[in-house]
Length: 371
Ligand code: SF4
Image 1: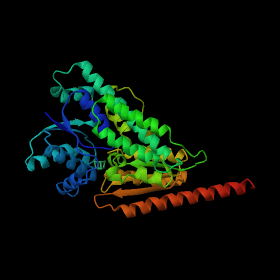
Image 2 (image 1 turned 90 degrees about the horizontal axis):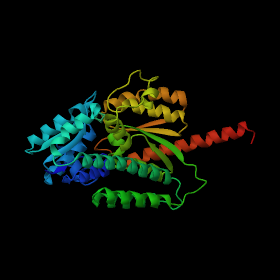
Image 3 (image 1 turned 90 degrees about the vertical axis):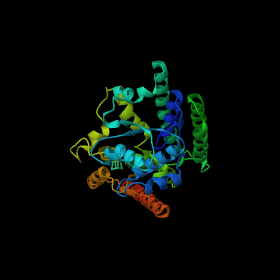
């Protein structure tokens, strides 16, 4: 058996740790591969959203490289995510591929479902082996997300511009070829140490921008045109609320340990949308936009793929949030046609506008103080 799996941001690092720990053979599609992305787009129905097309491209690449089993965590709910599993399967079968399909339904995931679906592939592995592999993968998810958060914090503050990017590029290159928890952990620790040594400007006071939106796009650099790096390059500190660790915590950790408090973002969304779920992570988009506006961030960016129903609904609440807190929210919609030049122009214009607002506020503050 050879497994393949789709990419979603940096999740591949933990998936590798998990599969290596379980001693399962796998093929990982190359990260951000344009050719497989285009095949996914070509073979998907036009109306499907960008994550579906990107994931199909990964599956095609995996099956073409000898994989016979697909591992996918999809969902059921109020948007097109419910169709992902069945539709991917039908398309691949109609193209003549033969494969096993392990589909974990994330919305109602339980430990039992994980074991029922993965159990048949784990014969010969002891409970200790499985627990160790899962624990190491969980550590990896949070450690890797921590690295990306650290890099986002450093970019607008580093004295030698581009240092954080160089460290992260080296990390990504290394981690894609390393196998096994110990080697991957070494790569993470090496990057963490290097980031800690980056010299920062003690007087830097970068713009603070919150990123909300559809999780696949917000966390997948090949689809969001590397938004965190671009904003960092423009001198902004980016708070991405849609990291892979949030997703793992929500869908896997809470499934295994079903004792958890109510989601803060869902609570914060209630004044704007009196409901707990509008599909996808739309309700989190509303709640996180409200929470970050209240916390005094300079601006918020919502990003989602063209036609994403939950994010379109979430967007409709932004006028009220902006009116209440006075923090600007910009929406970026991406699809397979998105041109980088126009996208960068919008990010630059947004950052310029936020800088001007800051200056005006500072001047007004000084006048009030009689300075
Ligand atoms: S949340 Fe949006 S992008 Fe994701 S599956 Fe649903 S409709 Fe598609």
